[in-house]
Length: 385
Image (cartoon, rainbow, N blue to C red):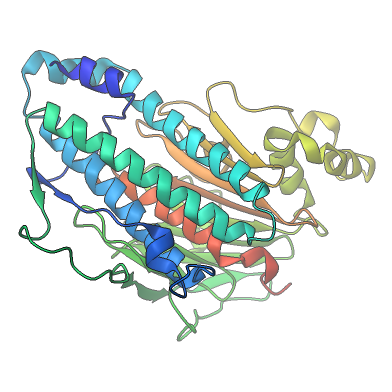
């Protein structure tokens, strides 16, 4: 079976993620059974569901990496097919769109069950189904599955292992002068270790975000909100405070903007592109005289792939070598795509993350975005400066 038929037949992604392993571990668990609080399984532990969601995201990234590595062992012509075909990337994006839409619908139809728990359960189920498909493709491509444990009685269920990430303090500068980063935080997020790459939690006094371990961070703040920039190379705050320094390489940029202050123009620019249901906010900004209608082009960028789980969240990907939502940040277009997400509060405050990672770390992007969604940062906005 050639590479094209493997990907198309199973509707799978053949992601551009490198892995040194030649085998794929097998593991499966029922999130509902594992996380049931009692023998009747009536209530479910949110903490357990969060841990299981991390487990499923890690398993998915590992499965993608193992399949991609196995496919590199096929013939030269088949490898060329992968390099020259856009089908694989689109199938990955279609899967992400399917998962977001399915889980948004599940969360809205759950009755008295908390929305967040329904969304987590849905994500776990769909991720595990995807892993099973990836394993079948892995075997079809000549890979060998290796069970985690030797044959025998099934082990007692245990909570999935997750790893508390390292905390990195980020200095910032802005309206009232330089600020040292926090000396500590109450609790760093937990995240999977994926393909030998770990995440760290980078935090200024205003914002915090997951990004690859051993990167560097700087923060900016003002009356409009705050920005946190994390890059593999070292930057000074002054590079971004005193000039519009572009980012040509990998980076994670987290932006918070107040809708009720000088940040309203930035918010309206994003709302016009991503949130048609909130068009009245753009109208109010124009009516205030802060900007003109021409400052807010309406509708998605032509090349962006966009998913809206609801009227206050949007996920996007700006393709390589194109301008789009991703390049409204300090990131400029290059040969790698930019993945991101925008979240609005009920008052239209904006949280926006733009992520461009090296090819071998691209599988970390979903964990970064999921962590922001779970952080409830819009319910505890940065202090106004």
